[in-house]
Amino acid sequence: MIEETRTVFWENGQVCMIEQRLLPHEFKIVRYDTYQEVGDAITTMVVRGAPAIGAAAGFGMAIAAFNSQATTVEGLQADLKTAKDFLAKARPTAVNLFWGLERMMRVVEKPGWASADALRQGMLAEAQKIADEDIEINKRMGANGAALVPQKATIIHHCNTGSLATVGWGTALGVVRSAFEQGKDLFVLVDETRPRLQGARLTAWELKNMGVKHMVIADGASGHYMRRRGVDLCLVGADRIAANGDTTNKIGTYNLAVLAHENHVPFYVVAPYSTIDMSILHGDLIEIEEREQEEVTVIQGQRIAPEGSPAGNPAFDVTPNYLISGIVTEYGVIRQPFAVNLAKLAAEIKGKA
Ligand code: MRU
Image (cartoon, rainbow, N blue to C red; front, side, top):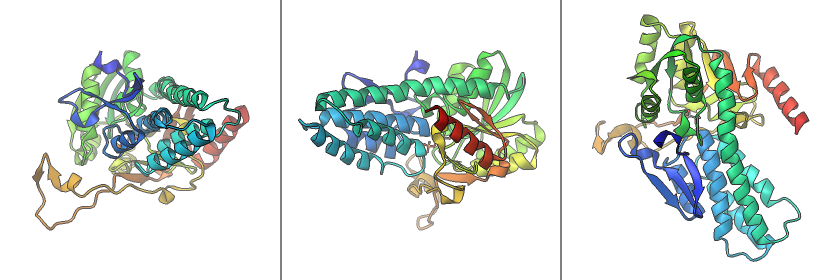
Protein backbone atom coordinates (compact mmCIF):
# COMPACT_ATOMS: atom_id res chain seq x y z
CA MET A 1 0.00 0.00 0.00
CA ILE A 2 2.86 2.38 -0.81
CA GLU A 3 0.51 4.92 -2.41
CA GLU A 4 -1.50 5.32 0.80
CA THR A 5 1.47 6.05 3.08
CA ARG A 6 1.31 9.64 4.24
CA THR A 7 4.22 11.80 3.12
CA VAL A 8 4.75 13.03 6.67
CA PHE A 9 3.32 11.55 9.85
CA TRP A 10 3.85 11.06 13.59
CA GLU A 11 4.62 7.59 14.91
CA ASN A 12 5.97 6.43 18.29
CA GLY A 13 7.06 9.93 19.26
CA GLN A 14 8.98 10.51 16.02
CA VAL A 15 8.41 12.63 12.92
CA CYS A 16 8.37 10.25 9.96
CA MET A 17 8.71 11.13 6.29
CA ILE A 18 9.00 9.47 2.92
CA GLU A 19 12.61 10.11 1.84
CA GLN A 20 11.72 11.72 -1.50
CA ARG A 21 15.29 12.09 -2.73
CA LEU A 22 15.53 8.32 -3.17
CA LEU A 23 12.41 7.91 -5.28
CA PRO A 24 11.56 6.31 -7.65
CA HIS A 25 14.33 3.77 -6.97
CA GLU A 26 13.86 3.25 -3.27
CA PHE A 27 10.87 3.74 -0.98
CA LYS A 28 12.15 4.53 2.49
CA ILE A 29 10.69 6.09 5.61
CA VAL A 30 13.05 8.27 7.64
CA ARG A 31 12.41 9.09 11.30
CA TYR A 32 13.46 12.20 13.16
CA ASP A 33 13.78 12.92 16.88
CA THR A 34 14.49 16.66 16.89
CA TYR A 35 13.08 19.80 15.33
CA GLN A 36 16.54 20.61 14.00
CA GLU A 37 16.50 17.38 11.96
CA VAL A 38 13.04 18.24 10.68
CA GLY A 39 14.28 21.70 9.59
CA ASP A 40 17.22 20.11 7.78
CA ALA A 41 14.90 17.61 6.09
CA ILE A 42 12.89 20.54 4.70
CA THR A 43 16.02 22.43 3.57
CA THR A 44 17.58 19.39 1.90
CA MET A 45 14.26 18.37 0.36
CA VAL A 46 13.77 14.99 1.99
CA VAL A 47 10.28 16.44 2.21
CA ARG A 48 9.19 19.06 -0.33
CA GLY A 49 6.05 20.54 -1.83
CA ALA A 50 4.34 23.47 -0.15
CA PRO A 51 1.57 21.69 1.83
CA ALA A 52 3.91 18.86 2.90
CA ILE A 53 6.39 21.45 4.18
CA GLY A 54 3.60 23.11 6.19
CA ALA A 55 2.64 19.79 7.77
CA ALA A 56 6.29 18.88 8.48
CA ALA A 57 6.71 22.22 10.24
CA GLY A 58 3.70 21.40 12.41
CA PHE A 59 5.19 18.07 13.48
CA GLY A 60 8.59 19.78 13.92
CA MET A 61 6.99 22.07 16.48
CA ALA A 62 5.32 19.11 18.18
CA ILE A 63 8.61 17.26 18.57
CA ALA A 64 10.22 20.44 19.89
CA ALA A 65 7.55 20.50 22.57
CA PHE A 66 8.21 16.89 23.63
CA ASN A 67 12.00 17.39 23.64
CA SER A 68 11.93 20.56 25.69
CA GLN A 69 13.05 20.08 29.29
CA ALA A 70 10.84 22.96 30.41
CA THR A 71 8.63 22.25 33.41
CA THR A 72 6.59 25.44 33.23
CA VAL A 73 4.25 26.69 30.54
CA GLU A 74 6.31 29.89 30.18
CA GLY A 75 9.55 27.90 29.79
CA LEU A 76 8.01 25.68 27.13
CA GLN A 77 6.58 28.67 25.30
CA ALA A 78 10.08 30.21 25.14
CA ASP A 79 11.59 26.97 23.79
CA LEU A 80 8.86 26.70 21.17
CA LYS A 81 9.53 30.24 19.98
CA THR A 82 13.19 29.23 19.46
CA ALA A 83 12.09 26.16 17.49
CA LYS A 84 9.73 28.27 15.37
CA ASP A 85 12.51 30.74 14.50
CA PHE A 86 14.76 27.84 13.47
CA LEU A 87 12.14 26.10 11.34
CA ALA A 88 11.16 29.38 9.63
CA LYS A 89 14.65 29.52 8.10
CA ALA A 90 14.31 26.13 6.37
CA ARG A 91 13.06 27.47 3.01
CA PRO A 92 11.85 30.96 2.10
CA THR A 93 9.26 30.75 -0.67
CA ALA A 94 6.41 28.37 0.19
CA VAL A 95 4.07 30.33 2.42
CA ASN A 96 2.68 27.09 3.85
CA LEU A 97 5.80 26.78 6.02
CA PHE A 98 5.04 30.10 7.72
CA TRP A 99 1.31 29.40 7.73
CA GLY A 100 1.95 26.08 9.52
CA LEU A 101 4.29 27.68 12.03
CA GLU A 102 1.90 30.55 12.75
CA ARG A 103 -0.92 28.08 13.29
CA MET A 104 1.23 26.19 15.79
CA MET A 105 2.24 29.45 17.49
CA ARG A 106 -1.43 30.34 17.99
CA VAL A 107 -1.66 27.16 20.08
CA VAL A 108 1.53 28.07 21.95
CA GLU A 109 0.21 31.53 22.75
CA LYS A 110 -3.34 30.46 23.65
CA PRO A 111 -3.94 31.68 27.18
CA GLY A 112 -4.86 29.30 29.98
CA TRP A 113 -2.63 26.24 29.52
CA ALA A 114 -2.86 24.33 32.83
CA SER A 115 0.58 22.72 32.49
CA ALA A 116 3.52 22.27 30.15
CA ASP A 117 2.34 18.73 29.45
CA ALA A 118 -1.10 19.97 28.44
CA LEU A 119 0.56 22.35 25.97
CA ARG A 120 2.69 19.48 24.64
CA GLN A 121 -0.47 17.46 23.92
CA GLY A 122 -2.07 20.54 22.38
CA MET A 123 0.87 20.90 20.00
CA LEU A 124 0.66 17.31 18.82
CA ALA A 125 -3.10 17.54 18.39
CA GLU A 126 -2.75 20.68 16.23
CA ALA A 127 0.00 19.17 14.06
CA GLN A 128 -2.14 16.08 13.56
CA LYS A 129 -5.11 18.29 12.65
CA ILE A 130 -3.06 20.17 10.01
CA ALA A 131 -2.09 16.81 8.48
CA ASP A 132 -5.61 15.35 8.55
CA GLU A 133 -7.17 18.52 7.15
CA ASP A 134 -4.64 18.62 4.33
CA ILE A 135 -5.97 15.38 2.81
CA GLU A 136 -9.58 16.43 3.24
CA ILE A 137 -8.91 19.84 1.60
CA ASN A 138 -7.05 18.18 -1.27
CA LYS A 139 -9.99 15.91 -1.98
CA ARG A 140 -12.29 18.94 -2.11
CA MET A 141 -9.90 20.68 -4.50
CA GLY A 142 -9.71 17.49 -6.52
CA ALA A 143 -13.48 17.45 -6.98
CA ASN A 144 -13.60 21.18 -7.85
CA GLY A 145 -10.77 20.82 -10.34
CA ALA A 146 -12.01 17.59 -11.91
CA ALA A 147 -15.08 19.49 -13.15
CA LEU A 148 -12.72 21.46 -15.43
CA VAL A 149 -11.24 18.32 -17.01
CA PRO A 150 -12.93 17.05 -20.20
CA GLN A 151 -14.00 13.38 -20.42
CA LYS A 152 -10.97 12.71 -22.64
CA ALA A 153 -8.09 15.03 -21.94
CA THR A 154 -4.41 15.62 -22.51
CA ILE A 155 -2.93 17.53 -19.58
CA ILE A 156 0.49 19.11 -19.06
CA HIS A 157 1.66 19.05 -15.45
CA HIS A 158 4.74 20.71 -13.97
CA CYS A 159 6.87 19.61 -10.98
CA ASN A 160 5.27 17.28 -8.44
CA THR A 161 2.04 18.29 -6.80
CA GLY A 162 0.78 14.85 -5.89
CA SER A 163 0.50 12.88 -2.71
CA LEU A 164 4.22 13.42 -2.16
CA ALA A 165 3.93 17.22 -2.21
CA THR A 166 1.15 17.14 0.37
CA VAL A 167 0.25 14.85 3.24
CA GLY A 168 -1.84 12.86 0.79
CA TRP A 169 -3.85 13.02 -2.47
CA GLY A 170 -2.21 16.15 -3.91
CA THR A 171 -3.22 19.49 -5.40
CA ALA A 172 -2.87 19.71 -9.20
CA LEU A 173 -2.06 16.01 -9.41
CA GLY A 174 -4.92 15.47 -6.95
CA VAL A 175 -7.20 16.92 -9.64
CA VAL A 176 -5.80 14.37 -12.08
CA ARG A 177 -6.45 11.63 -9.52
CA SER A 178 -10.02 12.76 -8.88
CA ALA A 179 -10.78 13.07 -12.60
CA PHE A 180 -9.25 9.64 -13.22
CA GLU A 181 -11.33 8.08 -10.44
CA GLN A 182 -14.41 9.59 -12.11
CA GLY A 183 -13.54 7.44 -15.13
CA LYS A 184 -12.07 10.14 -17.35
CA ASP A 185 -9.68 9.12 -20.09
CA LEU A 186 -6.51 11.05 -19.29
CA PHE A 187 -3.07 11.38 -20.79
CA VAL A 188 -0.59 13.41 -18.78
CA LEU A 189 2.50 15.01 -20.27
CA VAL A 190 4.89 15.15 -17.33
CA ASP A 191 7.38 18.04 -17.42
CA GLU A 192 10.61 16.48 -16.15
CA THR A 193 11.19 19.70 -14.13
CA ARG A 194 14.87 20.49 -14.15
CA PRO A 195 17.01 20.69 -12.16
CA ARG A 196 15.70 18.36 -9.41
CA LEU A 197 13.45 16.36 -11.70
CA GLN A 198 10.41 16.26 -9.43
CA GLY A 199 8.33 15.51 -12.55
CA ALA A 200 10.41 12.68 -13.99
CA ARG A 201 11.11 11.10 -10.60
CA LEU A 202 8.05 11.73 -8.46
CA THR A 203 5.08 12.64 -10.66
CA ALA A 204 5.77 9.82 -13.12
CA TRP A 205 6.07 7.41 -10.15
CA GLU A 206 2.74 8.53 -8.74
CA LEU A 207 0.96 8.37 -12.10
CA LYS A 208 2.40 4.93 -12.77
CA ASN A 209 1.16 3.73 -9.37
CA MET A 210 -2.29 5.15 -10.12
CA GLY A 211 -2.38 3.59 -13.59
CA VAL A 212 -2.79 6.92 -15.40
CA LYS A 213 -1.39 7.09 -18.96
CA HIS A 214 1.52 9.49 -19.08
CA MET A 215 4.74 10.44 -20.81
CA VAL A 216 7.74 12.25 -19.35
CA ILE A 217 8.85 15.16 -21.52
CA ALA A 218 11.77 17.58 -21.36
CA ASP A 219 10.62 20.94 -19.99
CA GLY A 220 11.44 22.54 -23.33
CA ALA A 221 9.08 20.19 -25.21
CA SER A 222 5.78 21.52 -23.85
CA GLY A 223 5.31 24.14 -26.61
CA HIS A 224 5.90 21.50 -29.26
CA TYR A 225 3.24 19.23 -27.78
CA MET A 226 0.76 22.08 -27.47
CA ARG A 227 1.10 22.79 -31.20
CA ARG A 228 1.38 19.26 -32.53
CA ARG A 229 -0.60 17.02 -30.22
CA GLY A 230 -3.21 19.34 -28.81
CA VAL A 231 -3.30 19.89 -25.08
CA ASP A 232 -6.58 20.49 -23.26
CA LEU A 233 -5.25 22.13 -20.13
CA CYS A 234 -2.22 22.76 -17.94
CA LEU A 235 -2.40 22.01 -14.22
CA VAL A 236 0.19 23.32 -11.79
CA GLY A 237 0.45 23.85 -8.04
CA ALA A 238 1.63 26.92 -6.14
CA ASP A 239 4.05 27.81 -3.38
CA ARG A 240 2.64 31.26 -2.75
CA ILE A 241 -0.15 33.20 -4.42
CA ALA A 242 -0.13 36.99 -4.00
CA ALA A 243 -3.30 39.02 -3.35
CA ASN A 244 -3.55 39.87 -7.08
CA GLY A 245 -3.29 36.21 -8.16
CA ASP A 246 0.36 36.30 -9.28
CA THR A 247 1.57 32.79 -8.55
CA THR A 248 4.96 31.53 -7.43
CA ASN A 249 5.62 27.93 -8.33
CA LYS A 250 8.46 25.65 -9.41
CA ILE A 251 10.90 27.20 -11.85
CA GLY A 252 9.60 26.76 -15.39
CA THR A 253 5.96 27.34 -14.52
CA TYR A 254 6.11 30.85 -16.00
CA ASN A 255 7.53 29.49 -19.29
CA LEU A 256 4.72 26.95 -19.42
CA ALA A 257 2.09 29.63 -18.74
CA VAL A 258 3.40 31.85 -21.54
CA LEU A 259 3.27 28.92 -23.97
CA ALA A 260 -0.22 28.01 -22.81
CA HIS A 261 -1.36 31.60 -23.40
CA GLU A 262 0.23 31.67 -26.86
CA ASN A 263 -1.49 28.38 -27.75
CA HIS A 264 -4.86 29.18 -26.13
CA VAL A 265 -4.53 26.31 -23.65
CA PRO A 266 -6.34 26.91 -20.31
CA PHE A 267 -3.83 27.23 -17.48
CA TYR A 268 -5.06 26.37 -13.97
CA VAL A 269 -3.31 26.77 -10.64
CA VAL A 270 -4.50 24.34 -7.95
CA ALA A 271 -3.72 25.29 -4.35
CA PRO A 272 -5.31 25.28 -0.92
CA TYR A 273 -6.44 28.57 0.56
CA SER A 274 -3.42 28.40 2.92
CA THR A 275 -1.15 29.04 -0.10
CA ILE A 276 -2.76 32.43 -0.73
CA ASP A 277 -0.81 35.22 0.97
CA MET A 278 -3.08 38.26 1.10
CA SER A 279 -0.30 40.26 2.78
CA ILE A 280 1.72 40.25 -0.45
CA LEU A 281 0.28 42.60 -3.06
CA HIS A 282 1.97 41.17 -6.15
CA GLY A 283 4.33 38.40 -7.15
CA ASP A 284 7.49 40.48 -7.51
CA LEU A 285 7.46 40.96 -3.74
CA ILE A 286 7.76 37.21 -3.08
CA GLU A 287 11.21 35.98 -2.08
CA ILE A 288 12.53 33.42 -4.54
CA GLU A 289 14.77 30.73 -3.11
CA GLU A 290 18.15 30.47 -4.85
CA ARG A 291 19.64 27.00 -4.43
CA GLU A 292 23.16 25.62 -4.94
CA GLN A 293 24.67 25.91 -8.41
CA GLU A 294 25.57 22.21 -8.35
CA GLU A 295 21.92 21.25 -8.71
CA VAL A 296 22.25 22.63 -12.27
CA THR A 297 25.85 21.88 -13.18
CA VAL A 298 26.17 18.36 -11.76
CA ILE A 299 24.05 15.34 -12.70
CA GLN A 300 24.39 12.17 -10.62
CA GLY A 301 27.78 13.21 -9.33
CA GLN A 302 29.08 14.07 -12.80
CA ARG A 303 29.86 17.71 -13.63
CA ILE A 304 28.28 18.53 -16.99
CA ALA A 305 29.16 22.22 -17.30
CA PRO A 306 32.79 23.30 -17.67
CA GLU A 307 34.63 24.02 -14.42
CA GLY A 308 34.42 27.74 -13.84
CA SER A 309 31.05 28.22 -15.60
CA PRO A 310 28.69 29.52 -12.94
CA ALA A 311 25.01 28.57 -12.85
CA GLY A 312 21.88 30.38 -11.70
CA ASN A 313 19.41 28.24 -9.80
CA PRO A 314 16.19 29.98 -8.80
CA ALA A 315 13.91 27.27 -7.38
CA PHE A 316 10.72 29.16 -8.29
CA ASP A 317 9.36 31.78 -10.66
CA VAL A 318 6.32 34.03 -10.72
CA THR A 319 3.51 33.62 -13.23
CA PRO A 320 1.67 36.92 -13.68
CA ASN A 321 -2.05 36.73 -12.99
CA TYR A 322 -3.20 37.50 -16.56
CA LEU A 323 -1.75 34.18 -17.74
CA ILE A 324 -3.88 32.20 -15.28
CA SER A 325 -7.34 30.94 -16.29
CA GLY A 326 -8.40 30.09 -12.76
CA ILE A 327 -7.20 29.22 -9.26
CA VAL A 328 -8.76 25.99 -7.97
CA THR A 329 -9.14 25.98 -4.18
CA GLU A 330 -11.14 23.91 -1.71
CA TYR A 331 -13.72 26.72 -1.84
CA GLY A 332 -14.18 26.53 -5.61
CA VAL A 333 -12.56 27.96 -8.73
CA ILE A 334 -11.54 31.61 -8.44
CA ARG A 335 -11.61 33.50 -11.74
CA GLN A 336 -10.27 36.85 -12.90
CA PRO A 337 -10.15 39.60 -11.74
CA PHE A 338 -8.19 37.81 -9.01
CA ALA A 339 -7.49 40.91 -6.89
CA VAL A 340 -11.25 41.39 -6.47
CA ASN A 341 -12.28 37.75 -6.21
CA LEU A 342 -9.50 36.68 -3.83
CA ALA A 343 -10.33 39.63 -1.55
CA LYS A 344 -14.00 38.57 -1.64
CA LEU A 345 -13.09 34.99 -0.70
CA ALA A 346 -10.81 36.17 2.11
CA ALA A 347 -13.59 38.37 3.51
CA GLU A 348 -16.09 35.49 3.35
CA ILE A 349 -13.70 33.14 5.17
CA LYS A 350 -12.93 35.78 7.81
CA GLY A 351 -16.68 36.34 8.26
CA LYS A 352 -17.24 32.64 8.92
CA ALA A 353 -14.29 32.28 11.35
O1 MRU B 1 11.01 22.75 -4.58
P1 MRU B 1 9.77 21.94 -4.35
O2 MRU B 1 9.85 20.56 -4.88
O3 MRU B 1 9.34 22.01 -2.90
O4 MRU B 1 8.67 22.70 -5.19
C1 MRU B 1 7.38 22.20 -5.23
C2 MRU B 1 6.49 22.96 -6.12
O5 MRU B 1 6.87 23.95 -6.72
C3 MRU B 1 5.07 22.53 -6.17
O6 MRU B 1 4.54 22.76 -7.43
C4 MRU B 1 4.28 23.35 -5.13
O7 MRU B 1 4.87 23.23 -3.87
C5 MRU B 1 2.89 22.94 -5.05
S1 MRU B 1 2.80 21.31 -4.42
C6 MRU B 1 1.29 20.87 -4.01
